[in-house]
Length: 269
Image (cartoon, rainbow, N blue to C red):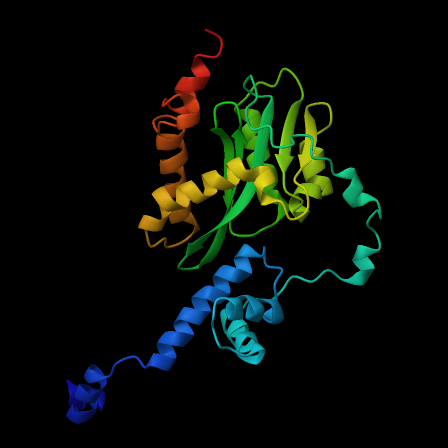
């Protein structure tokens, strides 16, 4: 076989005995951390900021090296051009009110929804889960999985939520200030006649802590068990957790150790 392949026996056995160098192990570790930091920053951080975070974690690494590794990974910082920025109302930030104000315990179903996006790693790249939760019972009323961070994924999650629920009165819908949640498309999908928009304050992830906690939960309890192949595989796993377990079976301290569905079913009793 070695002769057919044109490989010497000494070269073959030398290859088998070869071990991964410490330099290569360090590189693979850095690639993983760079990807993690990049996604935690919502794809905002470039090489300078990622280098600063790595150094804060006691890594000795140059900005040039981080930039080279980012190019290998095919990632770069999202940058909004000054021209586009001038079209935004200068009073925009002041118009985004935190109506929810961390009141995470509403008294009835379908009075407060919270929503957020999280990333899921697959062998073919990241996919993005948008979830919408009813704070009364912690039920996930709608979700959507997409292979991009476009607003369409958020809107599909909202549409699924509206399809699954009858809204008798306007619902407070709370999110962070991500571009998806301040877009015209999102605002059209959540019209003022049915929704009251609420936004976390700048740099305050705790303002949307419950849905962020859920996204940590689904990864810790379920997704992290698997090597996820692709979008289809991720969709199957998310469905198995949310629809077949979390909403219907998983007991929750907030729900008096009942599942979200069981807890909500007793509201009218």
